[in-house]
Length: 66
Image (cartoon, rainbow, N blue to C red; front, top):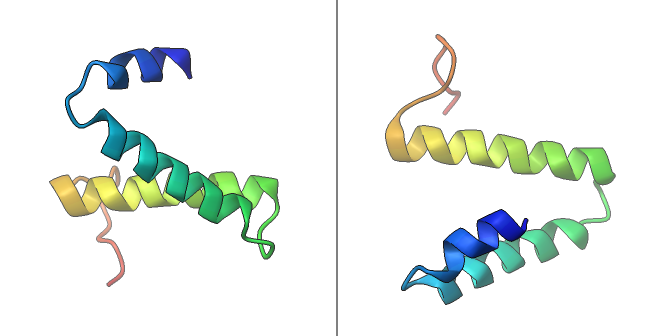
């Protein structure tokens, strides 16, 4: 985590990045419907979906469901 913080702390928009990450983490931590491993899977799925939406890269040969 320190490696990521070192990279982020030099950016001009670091406060928005840190606040956004904190909001996502708090939202997941407060979600009582998911266990710990499901919370991690949620983050992994969200990262894959965001990557696809930003760069149209899915990591597989099938299209994302709409």
